[in-house]
Image (cartoon, rainbow, N blue to C red):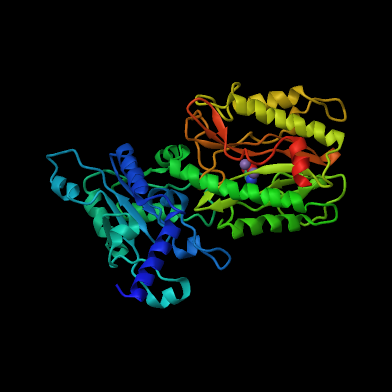
Length: 444
Ligand code: GLY
Ligand code: MN
Ligand code: MN
């Protein structure tokens, strides 16, 4: 091989490797589709990826709809996924027609060279080597979708898709999508694929945990960088900037949510993200900041003293929040409920807070813990979950107790990421100090 050709091949391989590290192998996605087909074996599954308009703006690069990404790993606009289960009724006139179809089809829009000058080279349905480029045995042009759907749909009375949420936002595309399917297949029931996909998404694959860990490790570095920078007189946005710069520097694509950096009174505002005030001596600073890596989020909060040393009152409240988190972590294991019921981890944390310390009026502190103890984390920072499902190995959740006392200008939240294991739970963000002495030491 000529030297330039070898160099070129090497470059292509390197690029492929660099991309593959951010994404699980195609087989994992194909396996998820096969599992979904087993769960929804009485209907055709149709999922629409985001179009360029839905997933991309001048402000944000294209980011795929999460359920679609979970099943395909596909991050280009305008794709459609169709899954057809095997038909069991041998006597049906469409038995052969349906069973000879590919079970998993990815439909892609045609290439548009003019558009590609603006948005970059895309993969089209008539390109070479699509199996390696997409992980699908069958790739078709989107113009063939209606025809293939009517072929597959003839065998089933049901189409599963992502149905609109009960309170769909104006910009949600699902209502229009579901309506278009109803129009295409008027005699077919349109059923919701969301619960089945949510059940799958709640239990993470080792590859997903690896990506979440990568987001988490980068976020830990970002928090540590911020702690070194914090001092009285700086502005909250300067701390947010220090953290975001670590994300971007280390390959995170963006923050997983708007960074929350609040000093003093702002530490008591749960989703404060203006980050516009000056931090003063004697205040605490609450930083709820997490990065996104390879589509996966993390979600970490620490509360630190602006001048490097907690006051006795700040330390007292901090230790109560930490004690509540430790109590919940010690009880976290398969079979426990995160948030609902008298035996839930939430209740354990609440009881701890309510049994320790007092406010200025001498009342217990439970009423200052004003949010839920945690949530699932994955492709979404608030990953979908069904509240009645008990913890299982492979789930990734946050444990984030907090006490917020506006009258004392004092809010403390400690939020860590936890992987539920076979017999307990493991902190994924355990490398970031939590003990107050360690926090103070790390700041100096
Ligand atoms: N960062 C949002 C949350 O903690 O849920
Ligand atoms: Mn959270
Ligand atoms: Mn958070």
